[in-house]
Length: 143
Image (cartoon, rainbow, N blue to C red; front, side, top):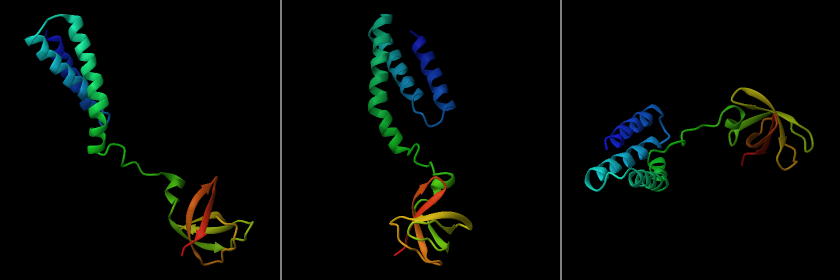
């Protein structure tokens, strides 16, 4: 039944038009295998549909994680905006008191900052950014 060959080509087109998902590829492979089974074993439509479904499920759950890990899909996502500052260094430009906020320059931008351990941090101290609380950087002195 040539329908499986047509489906395989359609699934390959879908795979190539949607980069990074790795779904169409497995359906295409299942379609090709089902096509060859239809040539060799049987023309029973429901048997072939069941075979296609089982092959697709097995391929997605067994091979997709391997492909994602191998091609490092989604590993190039970088933090954006303020999350990019976490674990970076800055310089205290306005003293940070134990229970008050001060200011820190990070990459030529001035930010409100507070101490991670509620300790005083002097002006000119190099600090690392631990977390971000709203628009306030939570910092600690670099050792």
